[in-house]
Image (tube, rainbow, N blue to C red):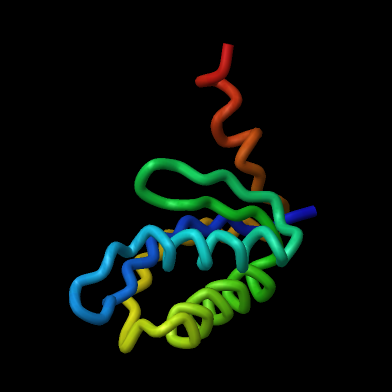
Length: 97
């Protein structure tokens, strides 16, 4: 069972003030390739998994931004660590009809 939820907003610096969407798309692709459960929202993406695995994904996302051409990256994360188990569905179930 997953023991953490991690939400990330990745803000890559772009050369010549280029549009960031292709960079963000690449960051989300890193998440998709990881196989963890995730949910994309308008301002951030939330992942569910083991804390070490999620932090490694954040590292890979930042590395991907540099490889994609960004000279620097700002990553804002929120982390819920719950050793007995953490679930996006459980946390938000009362808001779904």
